[in-house]
Length: 127
Image (cartoon, rainbow, N blue to C red; front, top):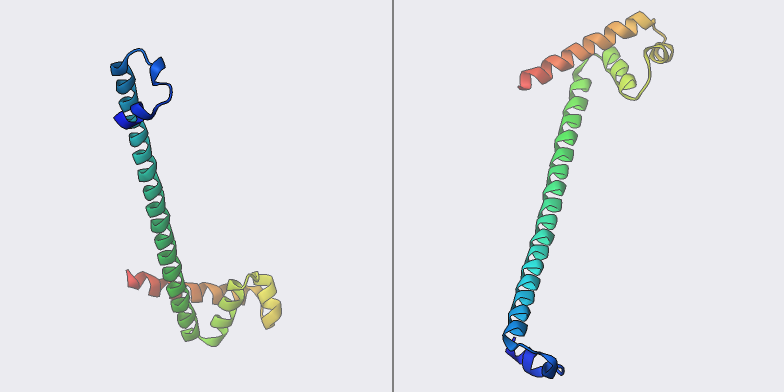
């Protein structure tokens, strides 16, 4: 701080050295505190982004594991029920499934309900 005072080309214009040095120290302190706060915010932002990405990756892995489990359970269902569920999961409605499989809509509904009930029982047994 004092070096800045001595190297200041306008030091002849300064009327009170004590006041000048006091203001200089105050401004340097405020600048330091602002810089420290900005640095903490940067690190906090980086850590929160990393945590969000870790949570997102974990959720993706859990979802993928559940999907794999669901696929293996669908394969264990009776073949007609498994076909109905696969079509339903692909986005087909009951009428479209009945046309594709050549069966009545009520048969599709009962097969779908039976398959969903079995899958739900298994997933509930996990917890």
